[in-house]
Image (cartoon, rainbow, N blue to C red; front, side, top):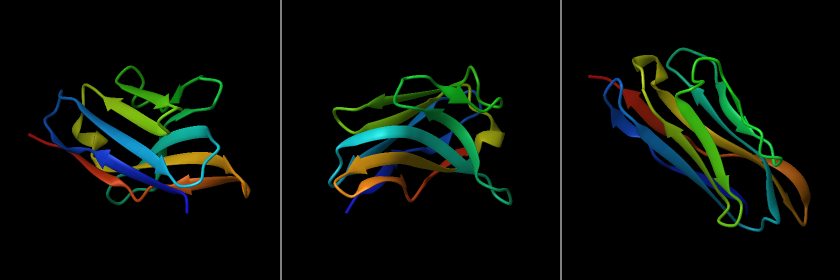
Length: 119
């Protein structure tokens, strides 16, 4: 069974930094598109950053210049480095990946990890 599990996150002060990582496990030939999404209290889930397998990166306007998405294909991990954090970055952060295995290609979500930015 293919799973994504996030780790990291937690509490940070405004202006501080945090990183969240995501490890993929199970029968996986390759990670294709990867991404990070978030859901703030009372709001819908939104895209934070995505990175197709060609290495291009796309960010939400609200995080451009502050967040960095990266990947390690060999280790099947995703990383989101978050700098200059703001209280409005408080949310549950979810990793997402499209994976290819013997059953074909499909999307998989992690269960989420809480990030709180507060003084």
